[in-house]
Amino acid sequence: MQNQVGTLLHKYDQRVPRYTSYPTAPHFGPQIQAEDYRRWLAELDPAAALSLYVHIPFCDSLCWFCGCHTKIVKRHRPIEQYLEVLAREIDLAADALGARRQVCHLHFGGGSPTILTPKEIGRLFTRLRRHFDIPAEADIAVEIDPRDLDMAVIPALARGGVKRASIGLQDLNPKVQAAVNRMQSFDETEEVIETLRAAGIDSINIDLMYGLPHQDVACVEATIDSALSLEPDRLCLFGYAHVPWMKKHQRLIDEAALPGPEERFAQYMAAADRLTGAGYRWIGLDHFARPGDTLAVAAREGALKRNFQGYTTDDAIARIGFGPSAIGAMPQGFIQNTAAMPEYRDAVARGELPIARGRALSGDDRLRSAVIERLMCDLSVDLGRIGEDFGVGGAAFADEIEALSGMCADGLLDIESGDSGPVIRITAKGRPFVRAACAVFDSYLNPGETRHARAV
Ligand SMILES: C[S@@+](CC[C@H](N)C(=O)[O-])C[C@H]1O[C@@H](n2cnc3c(N)ncnc32)[C@H](O)[C@@H]1O
Ligand code: SF4
View (tube, protein in one colour):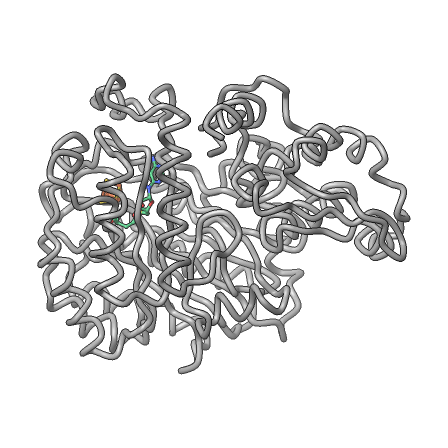
């Protein structure tokens, strides 16, 4: 068994994207600029509800594994200055939209959004509500680092309408925590979750990681047992993406202490076993939810979506991103804000939307995006039906079907004949390798490209 896993990992644990979008962010380019985005915003259907993402790129200490776009600050002044720019950026986007729009999803990500003071949180909500209708039923979520959290931010979040919180937990083992510079106790995590629930923010997600230095199956399982005692609605299980060529601070991590591919795989599978054994539904690659949670319901109904935050129920036609590095997804294509704070600030000061790059979608991009999203979300895709929807017919993917024959022979997926063309179904054995199947449909992917982290 172990050898078989080793062979599969060797063949399919390629460095492939996580497919939170297609085309993926490395294929956005300078050909899409602020004036394109301004036009795209103006073209949006005024009746359609939008999704908003607000990025807060600050933390007060650095986790050495961190792959997020954040900056460590010891003083509050840079955050205050940033919030002024962010408010202006929100004004600029609202101006380009022209009319007041309804919002169905709002996500505060980071970095650590709870680094803001309660007053700043209140002002940010006021600014957003000045331009957007955010109804009581809107899905408003925030990412929370529970360490040293100022509990006074929790009522401020609740007053703003936040209903869901995503708590970073990662691993509770002190040796692992020391190796990644993130000391976090179970008790402080529990206290934050209890305070959130008492304030009415009662949909709780917990982020866990595997593949960290010194982690082994036993400590992943122990962390999961502790996490389960907190009765979260959802859990995300992220494999540590070690990309020191992109995230220089990851060089602080002792590579000799990192688990190898087979050990990572064992941690992932042990975690999934534990979570499904506790009654959580395994969703896509790395999310777990209680059967009654909206994410699990969407998965059952084939309505699950995937965006830059991972799996989601967010089906808005457009997502507007605010803050440096934020990515927006429009019916016309993707846009990404500049990541560098000085450029971001200067663009906004000039009254320009701070776009660095983007990608207009071609017909082929939309077709492949639909295939990849269904594979990532449903672990199956009816190529015939999607081909019909896009007017290309069921035979459009003959080369890809051919390219999948190896995965099929290895028992990772089945290819059946549907009413209008082939249907691909990822098997239970193949789930960890679903990204490798998606990569076959990715016409931008350069074989052997080493930009991405390991698939499993
Ligand atoms: C923006 S952080 C969450 C909020 C908060 N900053 C925290 O860390 O608690 C989002 C999540 O991404 C995951 N993450 C960060 N860096 C990662 C990496 N290099 N590989 C895989 N997952 C990572 C962690 O699980 C983290 O909780
Ligand atoms: S993992 Fe979270 S808290 Fe740690 S540096 Fe990254 S964004 Fe900040």
